[in-house]
Length: 116
Length: 111
Image (tube, rainbow over the protein chains, first blue to last red):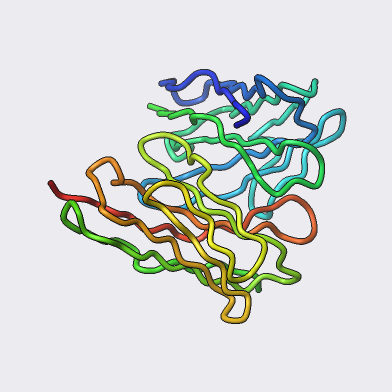
């Protein structure tokens, strides 16, 4: 199956700093990538849809100025958590679709963010 | 409002048992349903179902879609401790790219 990588896998930062998370499709081109957030023992919550070459589409309640998404190429999307606070601590997961119109999403291994 | 509901929320069984996990959905213009397994990291893809009544099978895991009942089941036979995970059901939205995820079923297999 398609492989999606994420970096870093784990990050600890101080409150007020910004953290960038990278999501890469390794063996395919992804015109669309997705960013999810998951709290302990809860399901995935879609934050935004990242489209190559255009602005991301954010879900209701997600602050676009706080969670900056850039999809500069067909294999890379980045999520930057700006001015992080402890409540931003969570598990962030990206995913990508293989081809347009395909329903299957392949997930990256996730990034555990802890804000002190 | 579109939604996906899974049951049970959690399940504890002994090795060798057979389990059935349920997923029901109410999604406009349904076209497919996906099952994922999530262990400590991100979900891994198991099955995608599009046609009613056709069983998808991989080893001890199998799944069937019932479009009439708007539901799907995931069966795991002869469970092993390695099957312990959260099993997620997801249905793509018609518009946009969103997935509607269920809350997941947490399965624990005891030796």
